[in-house]
Amino acid sequence: MRTIPYTYCLVKYLHDPSVGEMLNIGVLLCAPAVPFVRAKFNLHYERLSSAFVHFDGEHYRQIIGGIERRVQKLEPRRDESKLFPLSEDPQTVEDVISFVAPDRALSIQFGPMLAGVTDEPEAELDHIYEQSVLAQYPQKERKGRNDDEVWHQYRKSLQAKRVDKYLEPKIFVSESYEFRFDHAFKNERWHVLKPVTMDYATAETMQNRATRVLGEASALDGNTELGTYYILLGEPQDESHKSAYIKAKNLLNKIRVKKEIVEEDAAQHFADELANYMEEHGLIGTQD
Image (tube, rainbow, N blue to C red):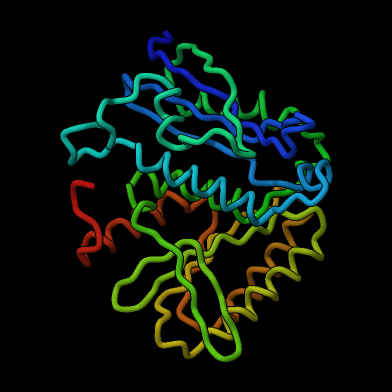
């Protein structure tokens, strides 16, 4: 029986206000009775890039990342007396929007508030996202996943253990390279979590990607700041690519720096182990 009320809105991208054409890119949902507040975005921007002249993909990712981080701050914490870090607990998605995007005169627009009831807010978020966002993209454009989408799969398990909020970007710099990792934590050395998609339209692309990751890790070999190099793999959805996937993993196993290769079916186990490690080393509190 559905007993949990929620409100939500579609998040849209507006490239040119004078034209007014918009595409749905995500969903924001709030169910204060649980409590639950979460956003889900389509991180593929190929259609945006092809639809709008001078579309800046990197800027788009930065904006979406900023909204996601603000939404994450609203997620309730058990060790706080208040559920949300606002003067008053948000009761609708409009309250959440006021916190994550007080200035709405931007390329990211929030649609009208809609409402419903559910027995599982996260499943409802996924359903609305599928129906209202992915449905507008032709199937061929949804072939495969990028690194950000793979990260979102792992992040679900990390969120459940409240580990993701302790991750931060880290840039390794030397005379010959500069590598940025969006998800890292420090315990004497920097431990990085690198999502790597192997879910490509062609098997050849998979091999090329594994080669690039190997080259990056080889360049970092000997860097005194680097601790463990966690590779979070996104498996191919095309069954015909399984043999190429095995070859790509064999190539990644040649990486010489201290590493751990994680596959999607072990995401929960990885989150459990990482949470235990961070608690044992005092990096997070036991009540987080």
